[in-house]
Length: 300
Image (tube, rainbow, N blue to C red; front, side, top):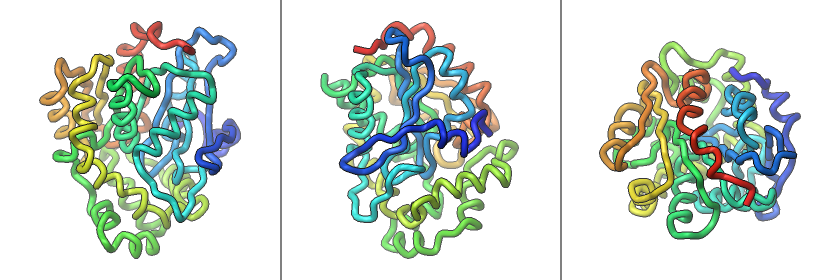
């Protein structure tokens, strides 16, 4: 699926910390060039930063790249007794940027990462935290009223969630995960095995009922997070896989309704993971949007 295998992606990473827990961090591009703008990439649920492997090398030709597996995801720590919250994940990325001397970034976010990005944007609009030069959103539940949660997500978010997490296995994961991709762009058996390996690392599959609390948070903080998107001066583009059953065409339409002068690129036949399913088109649409804005993000 990507230019870097799962093992290569892991080998190219480094360790960071968040609240005393180990965090998997990855950088790309020429970090010796302090004038090169920084692109911060935020992954989705239930996967990891490896989602960006298909477009990583091409983006590294234009940016210094910075990403991490959020706490509870991928190769980062997955503590059992932890209050997994969107605001805390936003803190993680803001701290990561600060640790690398970065105060201003372009942002590329996907899925759960869109919600983290909305919190970072709300802080930016308030004049605090990480400064955002631009944002590109990939498929995600930005507007809870048109987010079509899968049955497994609804069950994980219910009082039965803990029991369902305990029963999760590779067969169930493969079936539910593959269903959010486009009908012609689903992962191979080998790729599904890799996604499962990341989820299962440090028994992360047993935490899904805790991580999925974001569904309730989206409703609780809707005014703040939707307001951040509908009332900002930060340049934005949405690249949306329209065949996504979770946050596809309905989400793109709602974005057009709520975001002034909405900039939307729809990808026919593509599902929930556009950067994996059609990396060429995602790169083309993203670079068309961001390259004219590259000078707006510096190391300061």
